[in-house]
Image: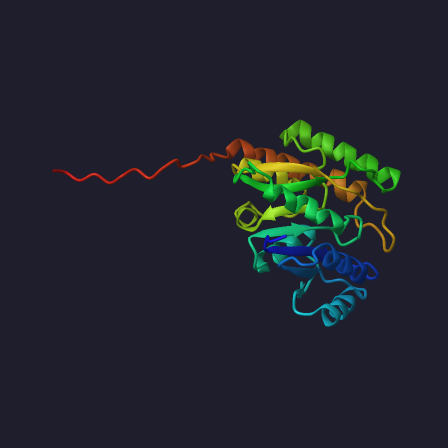
Length: 249
């Protein structure tokens, strides 16, 4: 595995999940050239203390970033990507439900023959069994269906937290709160391509979910139509070649 890689994990009040998840990332990327950035979104529990324990145990490849006040998952992701040192970034959720063992599956896409340089996002598809409560599964399915109906992003699971991103392409996207839920369509609006890869999904073993119907489905409606507006106003095109200079004879 030769690809230089930055791994970004946003955390908010995930004490108990930090150390196990960090160890899994190091195990999944053993032998790779990578860094791991943990972003603490102003947690009020022992999340930061566990990050510091992990850094002491695992060394300088692990970096800690901390927000002074809570800013949300999208901002935490942006903080991590801005600080990343490598051209490709993997993001995953801090609740442990994304399996770090699937990271090499996403990276393998970069080495496939005929891999399109225009691919800027590889996103997981949790088709191999969801381990959420029924209400969260239903709200996720409804959210994905509504997103596809309005935005036509062509991705079966745009809410999956496990993603492989081109750093420069991500930083060129319009930023807004909750943008992490719309990355596939934002990338396509900017002229990039998106791949979807089957990944596993695990039950939450520690802590409580931060998302429900009110702050996941209903709140996203305004964002949904805002992203649709961005798409209608987008005038992305590709410059094929520079016109050669001509001078009068």
